[in-house]
Image 1 (tube, helix red, strand yellow):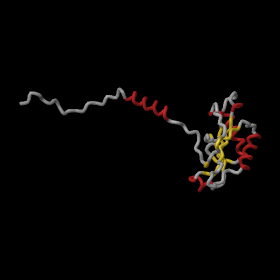
Image 2 (spheres, rainbow, N blue to C red):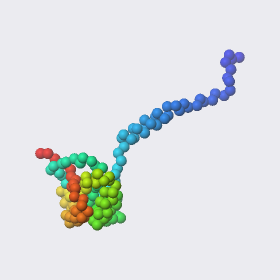
Image 3 (cartoon, rainbow, N blue to C red):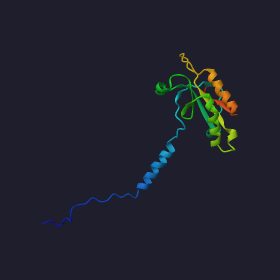
Image 4 (cartoon, rainbow, N blue to C red):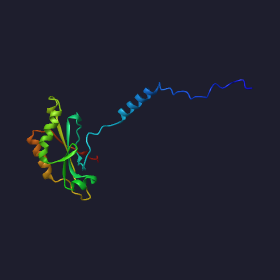
Length: 163
């Protein structure tokens, strides 16, 4: 006979989960560091002009963005190919800029309201002949910004290549 007798059926041991919270927190910290939060989805085609002089914004959280251009291809079936003004995540008209700026100011603290900047990103077209935004629309936007006393305006562009 055998010297060693079996003591019942061999059950599998339970999985030790003592290190599981450590692994979960490491993954959480990793994704918190690596992930960027998107403020809004751009729904218009924008090719911004080259800038001859660039100044970095001190606080981007005090900047409100206005995108002006034709809708992206996925949105053209719904909105057409005419030039549109995008405020946050929706298309609006130049008249709606007043309400947009007032709402943006209310979201800021009273001390920061005077430092609020509006960044206009408009499509300039491209060398292949595609038309950009007409100056009349940009003038309408600027007039509405003046009416609501939003006088800190930045025209966003990319830095011109150095020669």
